[in-house]
Length: 370
Image (cartoon, rainbow, N blue to C red; front, side):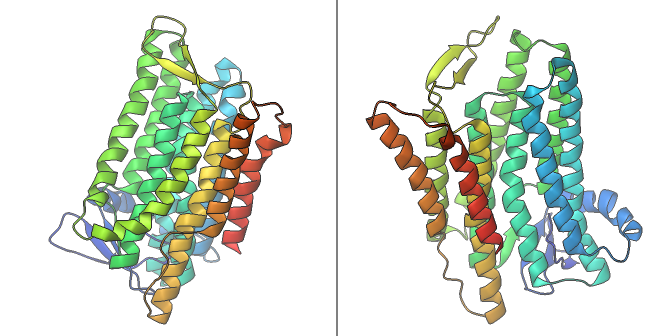
């Protein structure tokens, strides 16, 4: 999105637009697609927004949209086969509406001169939650393999965090690839793949190719964009502030995949398509992993946003280096529990362990909001 507090658009010689926040001075670089998307889908809606609706309210609405689309995606595999296509289409439409709301808050703020520092912070906080949940929702609703889910969620979390690291050091929020374009692509994938899987049995080679292709395209796209920031001329040693988030999320991803060590060959005519299946003792489920990453993203990236806003308000240097003690505590605790299980030979696996990732995410989210 282009920020809950908005800014005044300025033209440059580059193909992207630059928006400077009126309340914080942050410069946001928008791609051509982002500007076109705002003109087509957001600006026409501004006259229809009731006067009592503020930009921050729209940002909060976008959070409910994200939670709804993730809930529908998570429930899709439990539905009867003939109903799943409707759930996948619904996920795609909800992702599209999230993209509109994500840009509409900033457009409304600029049009009504309701810019604020809390608006920018709130917008980035919702994105910190929405980025991993939206990325994971696609893979939950189409039933892709867990490795693709892991790469997609981790990559999206890395990307958003590295953008905030650059924001901290340069005061510029850069979109190498339009956020709206990424959301639109995800929405289209959810709908198209959902319809294809309705008519093509999942056990066939064609379905395997579709699912594998989705994972490969997502991985390559994320890798291209992330590498842009890693090798950006303004990054350099500043990338060290990004390392703690990488370590935390890699640990969470490894913990998730370690509980799915058995390789099963996909049924049907696609012997090359291997799927990780859960061990009998697995408690860090795909949904738990995705929700935990959302909480981790809010604490890590959300802390960046808050510290940056405070530094801009006091006109001091932001000293936050990406290390959040609460994030480290929960990640290391989950890893330690799994390590203890390994050492004990999985002698005892309690049902309550499955709730720990959700408790951790809720704790990090509520503490971050407070």
